[in-house]
Image 1 (tube, rainbow, N blue to C red):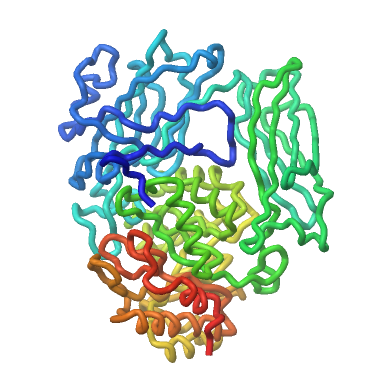
Image 2 (image 1 turned 180 degrees about the vertical axis):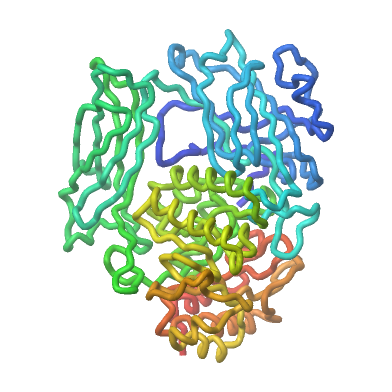
Length: 595
């Protein structure tokens, strides 16, 4: 799937926030003026000012970063300060409305001016922010200016797989600097819905709503009308007064059949309910938002990992979410959808998004198509107190952004001790990991939380292990019993640290495989190697079969979905071509091909 026509990139045009949709919006993607500011003089010279008439020397296609080919620039060098500028006009129909400017993600520190006036400052490279620009508007054309600052060499920065050296190597990839998700505008009333958190309760057949309203004044008569439907059939309708900016409400669903299983969400049956919210004041509709939810439950019962109160074996694939032409930004929405479809065609029922807080459009397709997702943070590589401040805030923002997606079934704040490299012996780093675990639980009690994916756990809901052993007989022996599993120490790392011990949690092998197979002109490496398609399938079977043979392991995550830059250990090439017939891969991944 490509997004290039006549050598020009086609900007991303789909609605960027699929779980909170309004009818009116304006996409600001496309061509912007662009400038590098290596001497850091832009603020001093007021490049954002109304009187600054000099053109920026470059053009860039937003939302693609300058390092990517789809941006129209394709420069991988270090340029940590960049500027964007774009002029636009608002629709006449928006007159009298509050105008909100949205950014899906800007890496890493963003300052935004509208018509020369500072409108917003946001720190964090992977989460959205918005600002009401109504009071900064002028007659006629408007101008938005963005200064984005990255910190490419700072290894305490929450960065994920972005490398701090100029050329990607090892397990690290090309950096992203600046705007890399959609920029857009929407009109709202003075009083409007800010957000809604939806929590399904399948045991009570209820959807619990936590609504947040902006602009609500004391004494105002305000009501919220909620309508729920399933495949076009109305299931519930509720209308109630809002007395406070935050309100809670539970709506009972009377449509369940088959002992409550008929319309639950799962990868096999990704059933979704449509829901609409109408905010009514003074006899007028002030705001209308449409969304959706899935009725599903993730739990641990007697040491078994369950989906919808039934034990469920998770077959995950590690997904880095990188694209050859767009780096962290998919060339098109269809590319995101196709990644989900390919993973499902190969027999996986879930993905572990690795070191990336993924575009909400990807999560949307997982909701629609039926794919579990482990939501993982983009980690730093080293520890500092400033890192703790930055990381904690950004992690809270991503939980809030993604809370409503039924596909997300696990939260992973830390991976392989990234950001906490001395967690085995450093009490401060151990406490940080515990703080992240408990902070996550304080914001979301409906999903398991992993303390530190791979090894060196303390308090954790799941025990997860990374193991790139390639020999079938070693894997079979290693995962034969709980004792042999916990004592194996793959990568020479202890499973528990800080005096913590196994307490009966479900055990999953959440990185393994990584078999390199050169199926294109792309060069690279993997954790083990195959020299033919036949050898590749045999090696894949040799690592997957022991997972199913184990009486201990309750799920796995195979490394990885695609080749990425210098890695050729994907099931697909970097341009998403299968390295072996999908059906043969599916037979192995689902266990149907076991001897």
